[in-house]
Image (cartoon, rainbow, N blue to C red):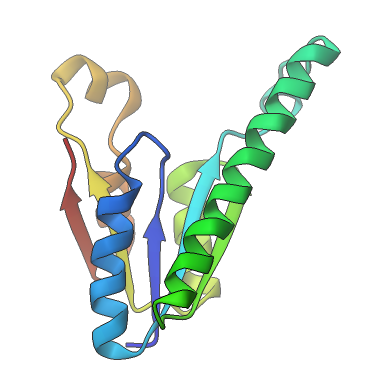
Length: 144
């Protein structure tokens, strides 16, 4: 095992996923790819981009998330595990699958939130989508 993809959503549970990925990467001397997928640009999905202040706020948010990914990667490097942060735009499941293939990922570590029926009906589950679309082993980390 040489490459682990850890998916990060920035809902406050990223440490659990990173810690589990670190545990495995340390044991196998593997590299961790920290992946955070953000929604596509509004123009891409058929909506106007809105006023400048909305674009500025979005850019600020993305820069903050990118910095956080790099900080997590730096922390892992200091602990002796190779790591790199990736911030991508697009459909979450599709981007996870594309990156997993491109990076020759051996294990995907992702979180699992227990949502109610209504949430699942409208939004689905990233964890379920990943499991259904890949042949790569997936480690689900239960999240609160």
